[in-house]
Length: 222
Image 1 (spheres, rainbow, N blue to C red):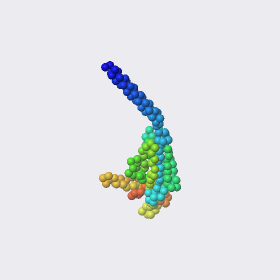
Image 2 (image 1 turned 120 degrees about the horizontal axis):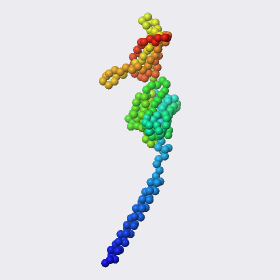
Image 3 (image 1 turned 135 degrees about the vertical axis):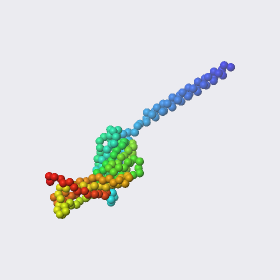
C-alpha cells in the first residue's frame, strides 16, 4: 500500500523538475532577445524636410529663395543645434537632410516677394502667413512641400500743391485696409517714403490688398 504514494511522489517531483527547466530555458531566451534588441541609431531617427517654392501668380519656380529651419522648443534645439539656412535651386527646390525629430518652424525670404502660402489639410502643418510650423517624427520624410510666395507690389506717384508745384520732403504712407470679424475696418501702415526734390515717391515690397495713400508731415532739414 505504501509503494503507490511513493511512485506518485516521484512522478510529481519529476514533472516539477521538468517545468522548472522549461521556465528557465524560456527566461534565458527572453533575456537573449532583450540583449540582442538594439535601439534605433541616431542616423535612423533623423528625417528630412524638402519641397519647392513657387510664385503664387504664375506658378513658376523661384530660385535663390532663402529657407530657414529653426527649432521652436528647447528639447529640439538641444538635439538639432542652431538654425539652418538653404537656398532654392533654379527649379525652386530645397532640402534639409538629417533633421532630428522635434518641432520646427520654416520661414522663406526672397527679394521682390512678401507673404507666403502654405499647404493645408495635413496634420503636420500649422499654416501662418509668415512661417510654417512642423512636427517631425523619428525617421519621417516630409517631401514635396509646396510653398508659394506672393510678388510684392509697388506704389509710386508724385505730390504737388494747388499750384502744381512739387512738394519735396513730405512723408507718404501706404495704408492697407482689412475688414476683421464683425465688419470692423482695420488700417495698417505697410510702408513709408519721403518725396524727393521732384515730389516723387516710391513704396516697395507691399503685400497684395487694397490701399489708401496718405501724405502729410514735412520732414524738416531737407
